[in-house]
Length: 144
Image 1 (cartoon, one colour):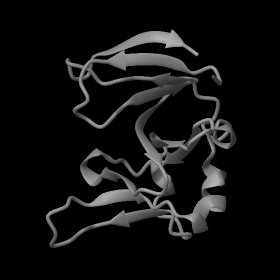
Image 2 (spheres, helix red, strand yellow):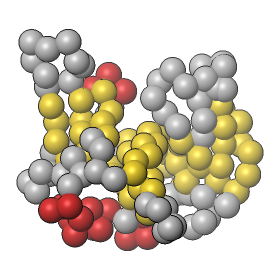
Image 3 (cartoon, helix red, strand yellow):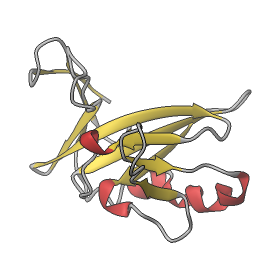
Image 4 (cartoon, helix red, strand yellow):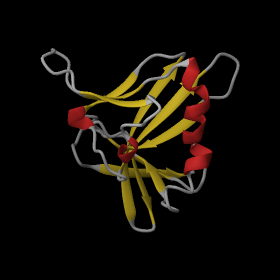
C-alpha cells in the first residue's frame, strides 16, 4: 500500500510500532486501534512533538473496512479539540497526548485520513516496524 516497506523488531519498550523511511528520511509510528469513540492517547514519555513522529489510528466499525488516520507529532494541540495535550498535573496519570474522538469531530478527523496524508509524508517510504526482544534491532520483513 502506497509503496511502504515493512520491518519488524522483537520488543515494544519504546512505544514505536512502525518506522517510516522514504527518500532517506525516517519517521517513528505509534499505532492505536479503536472502535466507537474511546479516548486514545500516547504517554508523554513515548511521544515526540515533531514531524518525525506519527500516531496512526485504526478505527474499526461493524460491517465496514477499517478507517486509517495519520497524525504527526507536530499536529498537537489542534484548535478543534481533536488533538489535546493533557498534563495531568498533581494526578497519578502520566501527561498524555490525546485523540479525543466524538461524533461532533467526525468531519474534522476526515482531514487526517491516510490517503490524504500520503502526500504530506513527502514521498517517504514507510516501513512498518514492530519493536522486538532486542531493543533497537529492526528487521525488514516485506514491502507493501
